[in-house]
Length: 421
Ligand SMILES: Nc1nc2c(ncn2[C@@H]2O[C@H](COP(=O)(O)OP(=O)(O)OP(=O)(O)O)[C@@H](O)[C@H]2O)c(=O)[nH]1
Ligand SMILES: [Mg+2]
Image 1 (tube, rainbow, N blue to C red):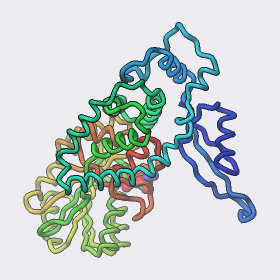
Image 2: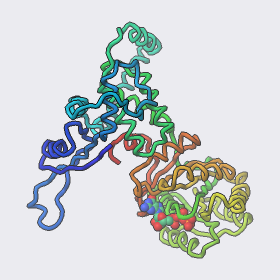
Image 3: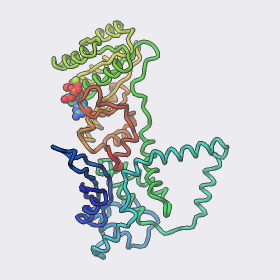
């Protein structure tokens, strides 16, 4: 797929420029107003930037090929990457007519933006039906209706739309295995002439559901909650603790203490000590399990005790063992929560290995950092589906405390399907 940005005084002008360069088959992915830069900006006109996508010629070729073949019952997902058949060479005209008017005018991002209200309306309707006592009957009735519907010819535009979503997911590095599963699912529910909005809403809804919910850091029912942050070197554990500690002390007025078991680097302890000084909360460096138990006693009136740990390779079994020792030393004396901090910039295969190794240490939830450093968030979805672990927070910048938020599946799924970040 080719993705490119074009500027114009209006959206139409920018789209016309895109079509001139890339042909009629472009799909608008995003439209945004760009503020003028530099001196005397008040006198400069605003511009509109459109991001457009176009399947590359190989892809278009396959599409034309498929559309000229007798209509199959469904597009098998495995055929999305099928090599073109040699017998029929399409002309430029064929390629242009293959990208139909309705798809061309689709704006996936706008659709994704209005999706929320569409889903809410659907949900409300379902609830009303359930309340009226007809909820239970609804499904079979709908199924019967669908069964009565006579076979209609396939709509190639729908296939094209699905393919665009599929390619967007792959470009966002969603594992092919999961992208295929999602598409197979969508393919099963495909009906002739079904509007794109419904297809998109269906895929979106299913993907969001796969992520599940997280409560984030929750208060202990009794005594302080001990919260451990584990993970490889340099992923942002200490910075994340500073962000979380700041929001709990400043915004929620909770009593927070900070501990670090990172005694490998002097600078590491100093980094957290600095944050503790700024926030005016107590801080301790912990060398042994006994010291950790002692700190728990010292801060038993507190709401939260955040524990920073040394970053190390997941292959370092000795250090993983030491970490487990610390956790085991307090797990019967305090309510604990463990977070594995991972950077979304790490290669997916490595993320999997890291996630696997830390399973030996504790049951954990995930925090993904550095979302600002990459546009491809597929690993978040892959890891979730592969390990079935809750994702609690994401961070997207170095600013303390602002660059952290509770994980928002809707936002992530929108991005994976081609919406804005
Ligand atoms: N771009 C970006 N940088 C981040 C983010 N979170 C942390 N960082 C930066 O990543 C670097 C490492 O952060 P630390 O918090 O020291 O990481 P750590 O996991 O504690 O590192 P070790 O203690 O050495 O294992 C710092 O420069 C942080 O400012 C983020 O969300 N985005
Ligand atoms: Mg650190």
